[in-house]
Amino acid sequence: MMTLHAEVGDQHDSSLAANLAASLREVCKLRGEVVLCAPGSLPADGKVIADERSLA
Image (tube, rainbow, N blue to C red; front, side, top):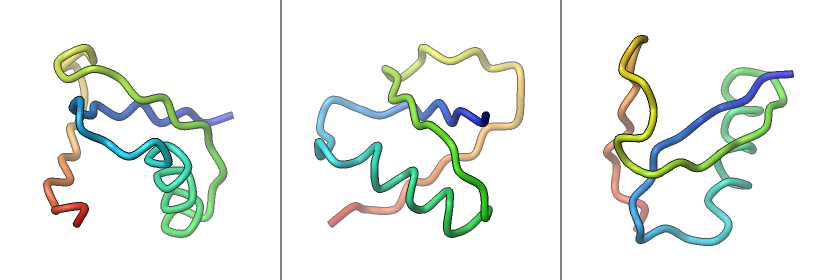
């Protein structure tokens, strides 16, 4: 089972986790759980992928 931990700010849509899971499935062809975390809460011990696109 894969789990994607994503740091998100306070201003996010309630469907963000579901949208991320759908994108993960579409792009990686893998199903996984999405856990939304507070900014700065994840350890900086691996490769960071920052998606800074606007959601609007």
